[in-house]
Length: 306
Ligand code: PPE
Figure (cartoon, rainbow, N blue to C red):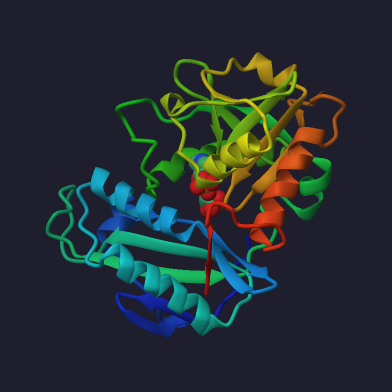
C-alpha cells in the first residue's frame, strides 16, 4: 500500500508534522522488533466520524505491552484522548488509526529495559484491505507453507511488530503465487489465521472459528462478528478446525479491522460453496457495515464519536 499522507502525527504528547515524525536508526525497535501496536477504523457516519471499538483497541494495546513488560507512559484515558485528537486534527471523516508504542533510542543489546518507551498515533486513508471487489465477490486465497507462531515462542495474543515477520512470509508467498492472502495452520496442523485476518467458516447454518488455542490474534472484529452472529440467532463455535473443513465449508470469510468482513471465494483454487459470497456472510456484512456506518442501532456501544 502506498502511504497516503495525513497532516499531523501525535508523537509523545505533541502533534507534529507528518514528515517530521522520525526515529533514530539505532532505536531498539529497529533492531529487535520491540513494538506493540493497534489498528482500528474510524467510520464516516451520518452523525459524524466514529471510531469502532476504540476502548477495546486501547485495552488490547495495554495488554500487549504488559506481556512484554513494557510500561506505557500514558494512561488508557490519555491515549484514548490522543487518538480522538489526532483524528480531529487531521480532519478525516473516515480513516485507519495506528497507535504504536515502541522501545526507542538509548541502548542496544537485547535487554530493552533502559530504552525509553515512545508512543505515536498516526491516521491515514485506507480503503478495502483485499480490494473493493473482494468484499462483494470474495477473495482467492491459499494455504500457506508457513505455520503461524508456535505456542510459548512468540505470544500470539500480543499484537507486536515482531510477529509480523511471520505475517510477511505468509503474505509475500501468497502474493508471489497469485493469491490475495495466505491462511496459516498452527503448529499442531489446525487452521490458525491469515497474515492479518481471523478466519470463519459456515457449515450447515452454524459458524466456526479457531479458538485462542490456535495461535491467533484475538481479533476485535472477530469478537464483534461472533456477537452480531449470536444476535442474529446463529450458533458460533470456537474450536480446532481441520484444514480440509475449509474446502468443504458452505462459506468462508475473513475478519479484521482492515479487512472488515471479506468473503473467500476460492482456497487453493477450490471453490468454496458455489464460489460466491454466501448468504450468512452477506447477513454478517450487512449487520457489521450497518452498525459501523451508523445506519443500525449501536446496541453494544461500539462507536465513539470523534
Ligand atoms: N490476526 C492478525 C495476525 C492481524 O494482524 C489482525 C489485524 C487480525 C487477526 C484481526 O484483528 P482485529 O483487527 O482486531 O479484528 N490486522 C491489522 C493489521 C493489518 C495490516 O496490514 O497492518 C488490521 O486489520 O488492522
